[in-house]
Image (tube, rainbow, N blue to C red; front, side, top):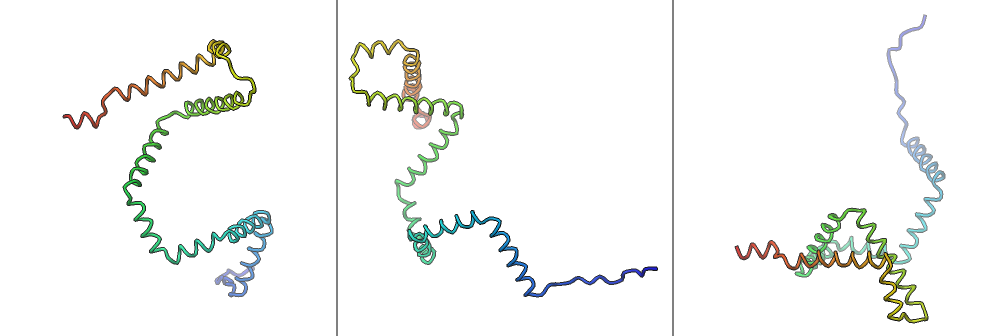
Length: 169
């Protein structure tokens, strides 16, 4: 009959065995990810040649002075406007639906493409040809969109702002 196990001894590797195991793991990962490692080395080499590492090292060594200069620059009066304008821009972009933005950007891109093509034509456009183009559905849609945009813009200019009403009241 078998005897009961009363003591379990756990084998603890010594420091040399741990180092050998760690080295083996590192080498295995390096060989499995050879392309990524070589790409990272090339990237680091390029950054070194450009002097980026020297600049970063200098910034780290002088971080107190660099931080003080950064704070001084942020405290400039125009920087407050830059920050506020950035926040308003982000708020504006957040208010637009992605579908509207995508449609508008596609329209702007196509418009710029057509404008470039028209600029490359050797023959100048006559008023008669331009008058004919006014009948196309694309031109009509564009004019209607611009008129709606101008109406919305004008509404913002005509209605007194909340700040102006607060000043009067």
